[in-house]
Length: 155
Image (cartoon, rainbow, N blue to C red; front, top):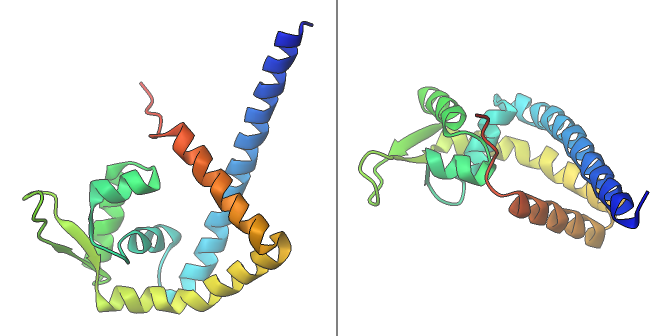
């Protein structure tokens, strides 16, 4: 095997290991998120969408871009949040048809119920990884997400 072939195999192995770790983490984060969100009457998906609009109202397409998922899946969850009084649509001065999603007081209260468990999990991870290691983990994952860019669509 040539050095180039060996390097290619190493890179492929690194990609496979990275993907498998991310898939595993996705499953763990979803399970943890469901556990944290459940007592507040939310699902992980509803918490995720509400969390995206805590700082500022966003259109559904903007939420989808930020989360790297389809607009349709965000629209479905957003509509459920609005139906249940946890979020509301507001006019969007930049686009007449693309309304902005914002949390209601009930939505903010639901997210506030999650904060103690969220904080406790953050403390556990910081203790296990160290604050610097935890910050580096976040930076590496954010960089990987940026390098991979937009979600791949199937033909």
